[in-house]
Length: 285
Image 1: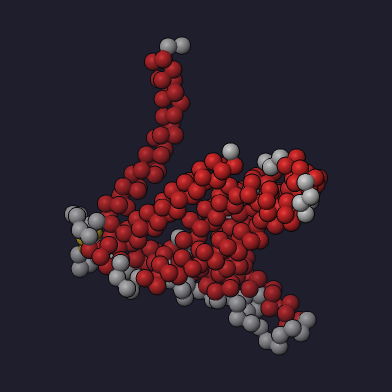
Image 2 (image 1 turned 135 degrees about the vertical axis):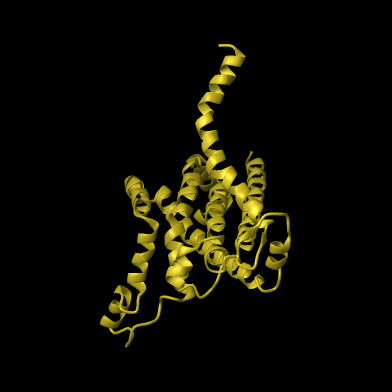
C-alpha cells in the first residue's frame, strides 16, 4: 500500500471521531467562548460583539468567595478520596487475593445506576426522617433526629461516594503494575514493611496517585448536583453559579465567562499534571 493510500485509509477511519469531536466539542466550546465576550441588553438578551465586561465583573470581590468555596470543596474532596482510596487499592492488589476481581466489580457497580438516582438515595439516607437518623434514634445514640441534609459534611459524603471509585481505579492500576521482585529485594536488604512501602511501593505508585487527584479535582471544581441536593444549595460554587447565571439571572455572557475561566483553570491543572508526571517517569527511569 502506497503512502497516499495509507494516509487516506487512516483519515477515513478517523473521520467519524473527528466529526463527532468537532460537532460535540469544538463548536459548543467556540460558542461558549464567543458568548463570554458578548454583551447583554436590559432584558437579558445576548448582544453580539466583543466586550470584556463579563470578565471584569467576574473578577470583582463579589465572586471571589465562590471561587474559594469551589477550591476548598475540590481540595477537601480530593484529599479525602485519595486518603481513603489508596488503602482500598493497596488492599485489593496485595491482600485481596482471589477476591480482587469481586472487589473491583463492587466498585464498578455504582456506575451502572444513574448518577441522580444515586445522589437522591443519599437524601433518603441522610434525611431528617431517613434511614441513618432512624438508626441513631432507635439505638438511643441521639434523642431526636439530626439535621444532615444542607450541611457541608453531607456534601463531602456525596462527593466521596461519587469520586471514590475513580480514585481507586488508577491507583489500583499503578500498584498492580509494580514488579513484586522490587519489594522482595527491599525486604531481603533489611527494609521493614513500612520502609519498603515508602521507599519502593509508594514512589512507584505516584503516577496513579496523581491521576486520581486529577480525576477528582477537575470535576469537583464544577460539580453541581451534589451541593444542590445534599447541601441545599446554600453554599454557591462554580457549578450552580453557572446554572443560576444562565437560567435565573439570564446573564449568559457572565455565565459563559465563568465556564471559560473554569476551563482555563482545569487546563492549567492538567498541564501541571502532565509535566509532573513526565518528571516522575524520568526519575523512575
